[in-house]
Amino acid sequence: MRDSADLPISIAEAAALFADVAEEAVLILAVSGGPDSTALMWLASRWRAARKRGPKLIAVTVDHGLRKESTSEARAVQRLARKLKIEHRTLRWTGRKPKTGIQQAARAARYRLLGDAARRAGARHILTAHTLDDQAETVLFRLARGSGVTGLRGMVRRTPLGGIASLCVLRPLLTIPKSRLLVTLAAAKIPFADDPSNRDPHFTRPRMRELMPRLAAEGLDARGLARFAHRMARADQAIERAVDEAAARLSPAGNGVAVSSSVYVDLPAEVSLRLLGRAIDRAGDEGPVELGKLEALHAALATALAESRPARFRRTLAGAVVTLSPPALTVERAPPRRTAQKSRKSTRKGVFTKSR
Image (cartoon, rainbow, N blue to C red; front, side):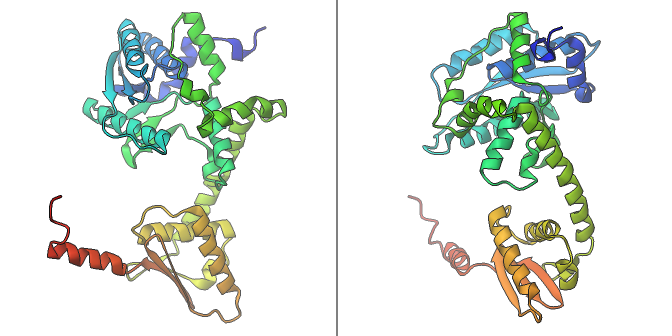
């Protein structure tokens, strides 16, 4: 009997993979032309063809313009989409490209363009071809960078795009190993493109990819890393529930929130850390709090609270000011910085209005 990893994905399996979006009117498929996204388009077309009605499928290829082959690859996707009776659109990332952080910038541009395409088409879901192998690489990548429990959950099946709840990225292939997608394409005799940047050691993910066979030989294969991510997700959910309960004890204070210092000090460390982070995110105006900086503040606060008679404690982080003045711990919006105030005054005087 053949191992399931050697078997193409059946129509019945495809139906299960797409079941939660079966009643959608339109679905956007992110298709680069590589093996994973080509398999996504092929499976979605077979699934849709077996149904009496909808949803409408629109394949979108983002041409980043970073390789000379990208235009011909987009045309190849267009030809296959036409053969599969799927509408296709090519979107181009135009403008100046950064000299550093190119992959991160390309990813941001890709999701921005996909989001634009989804809104124009009236679609609520963008389907990407992330696989079990991608999940393993993500966990390894985040582990190497010291992520906390939340980061080690890896990717989840459904994620709001850009914080917009009405538009989601859906990863239907997240539990499927890449090997099965390759077998599926081989069985259907479907060609696909090969992007050499996926093997370029100048980028982190390809280097992580090279480690996978050696890790698998030690028992840490893609399934093991994905299982670890699932367990981290389970733990994260429990911690978040505890933080929700603690957050219910916050009370309004000025332009922020406050909590009893005795209540705060009795919380488990991970719960008090996350509660502090939530309060700073809510009161501050400088974006998400970096975990390392939050941990440093949390440790300093814990030291102050451990004193028999805590002295007044005041620190700023991410646009919020954290004040310990027993019996309360308060997190409020930090006052504007002097440089920012000066800039605003200068702008009003017209210093920065002269065209250049």
